[in-house]
Image 1 (cartoon, rainbow, N blue to C red):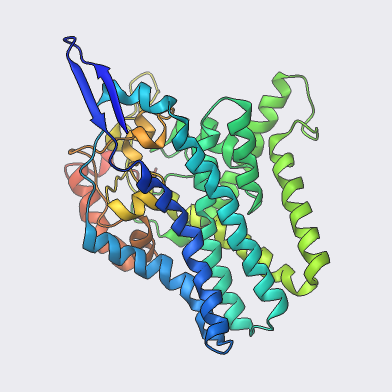
Image 2: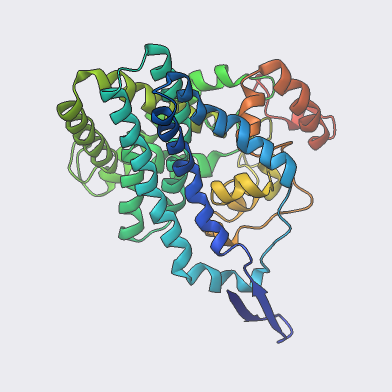
Amino acid sequence: MEFVAKGEQGEVIRFVDKKRWLWLGSLALPIVPLSAYALYFAAGENPFLMVLPLLYFFGFIPALDAIIGGDPQNPPEVVVPAMSKDTFYETVAYLMIPAHFFLFLASVWMVGTQGLPVWAVGLLAVGVGSINGSLINIAHELGHKTDKRNRAFAKLALSLSGYGHFTPEHNRGHHVYVATPEDCASSKFGESVYQFALRELPGAFFGGWSQEIKRLEKKGLPALHWRNEILQVYVLTTIITIGLVAALGWIVLPFILAHHFFSWYALTQVNYIEHYGLLREKRPNGKYEKCQPRHSWNSNHRISNLLTLHLQRHSDHHAYPMRPYQALRDYDEVPSLPSGYPGCLVLAAIPQLWFKVMNPRVLDWAGGDLSKINTLDH
């Protein structure tokens, strides 16, 4: 697909999106793990194969990132408006929703019908839950748009894991306070992912509710109202859960709850690595400087960026929150992660290894000045 625009001097600029059809490869994220179930039956119902979704997400994808490397394609600024209007890219995001739901439903069916041992159910909850946490990213993409259709699809995506408070907290909380001590979703230098989770998970929950209550109050509505967008998601999640329990029995409920927890935790892990230690400067008037590309950790690894719809080009996203994923750009001079997100989640799970790799990068970013770093003392 070629996009054509005029440059500042009136010259014609042509840009071919070589990744246009590759974006459909993002469907591999929820679809490939389904092969574990086919292999399960082909191998005589071997429960050890339930580890495959976990190995796929935290092993195979990081390996591909390391082998294939970065993505050289960067759309020129002048073609961004044209790319933003192309509905093909929205359609790709929409297709991700039923694909993730299918993985979830197939997993619940496996748990409800195959008599899997508890340890296999646990492995499945961690692996599939982590993968389906990526559907929150689809809600993230669609939830930044202002039209009713995309916001409705965002709520549908969030209903898979019951993370209804995400959009109000993310849009009206995180994007305002990102890379400051006031933001629960910005991790601090020397803080482990486990310490971070203890404040980010409740912080995001209460922050989201606070933002939604404020929105409703401006409309003269109470918190417990059908127009409460958080409650809308919770109702959808509850209906799905009741339907699955009714169809397959109470045996599936612990898996569903564990799946949802690990989906939430997957997002928390991603939040942890996205702004670790980075700090926006506070002006004499008490306000923080405008968020710039340098206030987010960036990753330009090709495979994981395709699978996550450019979420890892996070520097451009925070500098320009309304820019759609297909038009996000990489920058030469921004803080960069050593791997794509799945690989960095493995690093973060081992705090001493994460600190060894990332702390020198944070110090280098700040020129060795601790006062310019978001530390635990803030």
